[in-house]
Length: 257
Image (cartoon, rainbow, N blue to C red; front, side, top):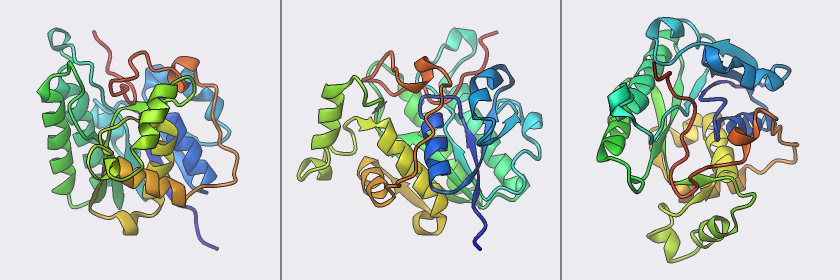
């Protein structure tokens, strides 16, 4: 009997995180959700299905030993919404947590890290956002840990967003899939299934940078008849993006104070 892969997910209470967890479970993985102490109440509905670990990705000490006995980490924490005057720079929001999680993977013997990045700078967002995302990618590539990087476009919940669903649909076809396809919005459900499948097939996607067209193909190959566990974490995290044309703020943010 093959032992199920044990996967740790950061940003588990976010717009994308609960979808990734649901798909991992449907594909037979054992899942650990690494959750900020202030967000533990949001993950409680999943306690019967996943292991919950409390830690702060901005605090290196709190991560010590948390990923032991895991084969894969999926890192989803980050945000486009910097507030430099409050200390929330893109460096602090996107590079620091990625670096801390990668170092946790190294020290705890994790074999493979899937890093969520971005394909392009969203409108009205500083170029520092992409620079820090790329710096996180470089840090992972030089870490010695196995890796896959997902450069995602804007993600949206398909329910209630017909125009975005249409834009995503036409991005599947030639010639758009060869040019603009990687930049057009993508359903969070498709992205989540693709990311989960990448994590569970690490040898196939080792040292690859993956885009929306890859996620579509991977998701199509890994459809499952298992019922997806779309938890009642909170409607605002589950189905609603207040700024659907922008990149949804993945995961959770550090406190402003």
